Every structure is written in C-alpha cells, then in structure tokens.
Length: 482
Image (cartoon, rainbow, N blue to C red):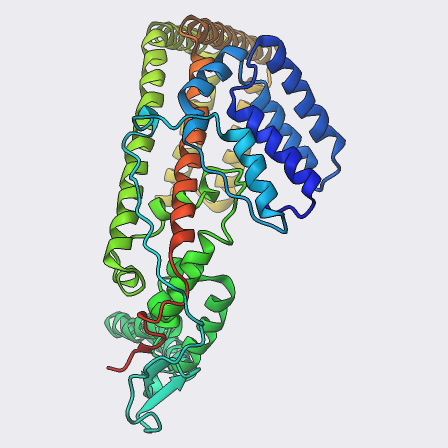
C-alpha cells in the first residue's frame, strides 16, 4: 500500500480487515454495494469513463447476491492471504494496528482445497549487485579488423558486401529490374528464355526483403528499438538472442512481469500469465541463457498448472454449449425445414418460373446469334441488328406489369416465411437457455475464468518479483562471430 498519509493508511487497513472478516453478503448489502460502486464510478471524470462504465455495468448486472455468496465461499480465502505495507509509516505503530485488526484470523491447518494444484514456489533470492558491475569480455583481439563490436556488448564478424543491407538490397533491386526487362523483351519471341529470366527476379526479391541480421548496422538499429520497447517486443520479433545480452534479457523479463506489469488488465490478453502461456516458450534457448534451471522449472509448473485449469474452464464452457445445442437440435431441424419449404414454394411460383424461363430464352437467343456470327453466317451489322431486336423483344416481355407484380409478391412471401421461421427459432433459443439457466451458468464460467487469470497472474508476478536483478552470473555480452 504505497501511502504516505497515516490516517488514510489506517482507514485502508480497516477496510481490508472488514473484508477479511467476511462482510455481509445479504441481498440488501449486495444491492447497496452495487449502487455505491456505480455512484463512485459515475462521479469520476476520466478519459476512459464511458468504456469503464460500460464494462462496470455489464459486470455488476451479471452477478446475483447468491452467485456472489457462492463466489466468496469458493474463491475468497482471507485466512491464507498475505499483506504487505510499504511507505513512510511508523513501523512500530503499524505492527500494533495490524496485530489488533488481523490477529484473530486463524491459519488453516490444511492448505485451502481451492489452491490445490497451485505450485508452492520457493523464493530463491540472492543479494543483488550493481547493474554496472564489471563483466568478463569474450575477446582477446577486440581491435581486429575481422570483428565489429556494438556498444561493447555484441561481437560480430565484419560482413561481406552482400551481407550488408545497403548493397544486398541494391543488388536485389537491380536483379529484379534486369529480370523484368529480359522477360518483357523475350516473352513473345522465345518464351523459354523469358521463363528462365524470372529466376534472377526470385533471387532479387529474396535479397531485397531479407532482414540482414548479419549486418552490424541493422543489429545496432534493432537493438536500440528493442532496448526501448523491451524483451517481449524483441522476443516476438524473433531477435532477442541477437540484440539483447542474457543479462539485459533477464532484467527486462523480470521488470516487465513484476515492476512494470499491468495490474489492472481489461482483456485476457493483457495478463502477464497469458504472455507466459501463449507467447513465451520457456524451453527456448533464449530463456536457458537468462534463467537458472530451478527458475525455469518453477515457471514451467506455473504455466502447466494454469494451462490445465484454463482447459478445464474451456471444457466446462464447451459442455454447456453442447447441452444447449442438444436442446436446440430439433428446433434447428424444424427451422431448416421451414426455410427449405419457403424457398421451394418461391421456386415453384408460376410468375418466378416464367420470369426465369424468359431470361434463359433470351440468353440462348443471344448465344445463337454469336455462334452464327463466328461461323461467318452473319455480318457485324446484321449481328447488332439481331441483338437489338432480341433485346427489345425480351425486355418487353420481362417488363410486363402483371409478371413483375407476381415476382414481387413471391419475393415478399419468401421473405415473410423466412422471417417467421427465424423469429420462431430465436424464441426457442431463449426458451432453451432459460430451461438450463444458460446465461447465468455461462456468466459464472466467465467469472471463474477471469478469477483464474487474476489468481495465476498474481502468482506469476509475485514470483518474478522475487527473482534477483543484476545477477553477475549472467554474461552481459553476445558473441555472434561465425
């Protein structure tokens, strides 16, 4: 609790104590709290207030008092909570207040059943060192013309001309231009030669668009970008092992998932645990260079446990959807029968049948005229005259008011029957959802998923915060020499 004012700190602790001692979750208390939270947010004037209120209203209106009571019983465990207070405070007085407020909370004899399977991670801590500590450099001939040193940390071979971005792209563009010129000049006279001329174009495209990560200037440029945006950015780009030293990777990875972590995510993808699960491959050699084996093992445990529980949530959601689909299957069959019947009646309507036959006759007549013209039986002038005559004849037939009225009536009947079938089906969907309490159960699953992300996210962030920064055992250089 980073709070300097003693009075506000004590008030905050009293509020936490009330929550820890199982506050009232009666229907009246829940509704009163719901209204107070809404009033609190509505009184704020933030840039994102509309989006916040929309999300808040959707969340508050989802939970009933009974669901909140169940959620509290299953997930809220004040008897196993940990409280950390930091700031400019009177430590002796603060200890007395904490003892007074929380001493009656008993520690459970057995671990909470709702934390079963969550790995109990041992915090491996070692004294941190100054990030500017001297590190051993890998070169004895640093000044050799065969090597390039970037910021004193990245050691590379001096690239050949074709390995540099400037000359490589220039060669590629020239190859593309020459290939296209030869192709244009030979395609009509000697097609085989033209086809062969496209091969240099393929080579040119490769040369023009490759990343040129053997070019020190490119590495220097990408390193500056990665130092600005962090380890995750470099890892997603697939170049963290080229632009960041193991020492830098470790520090960035720990900071991005502890000190700089997003504490109030609004989407599942914004959770740090989601990055660990869906983006980072901790078996990658990049991580082996920047983390200890026991740290990799701990992260693997957190990741596997989270994946297992997330899969269970997805399975519960899938089972609920299957349950709804089973109830809807006969109604879906009746809906499809009604739609097919409406379409069949439309297709069999006399006006629609006649309209389609006239259009087909028109197309056949036009085709016959063109066939005779291609066979030399008609001149161009005669062809145009016949086409004009046929067009006027069938346009007159198709524009008959009685025929058009019949087609429009058939379309209206088709649209009406389709709408009736779809509306009836939507009503059945609502009835089936009410029958199995689909919306409330789905809301509980989504709430459980959000709680799962929050819970494991805190475990991951707390663990990352326990890892030491500036560990001298990780080298602060990269040797990219071949």
